Image (cartoon, rainbow, N blue to C red; front, side, top):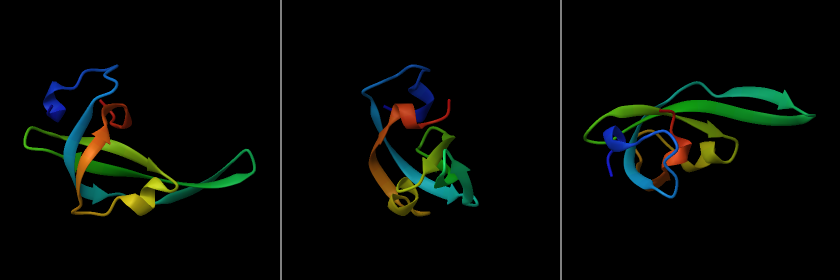
Length: 77
């Protein structure tokens, strides 16, 4: 499946994407716990799309990475 084929509510779908860019990491407190967040721009042959990354996910994704299985519900449509 390609990014252009995704629809809101798609679940149990994974797609292959490349991480084009990761934005500035922001830190925030939530309920007394420190958290980190950044928005990544990921792409495939059809389109690019935003993907929010939180906490430990920031350590798993690097610019230029090719990721084989990204859950569709992780992407911002």
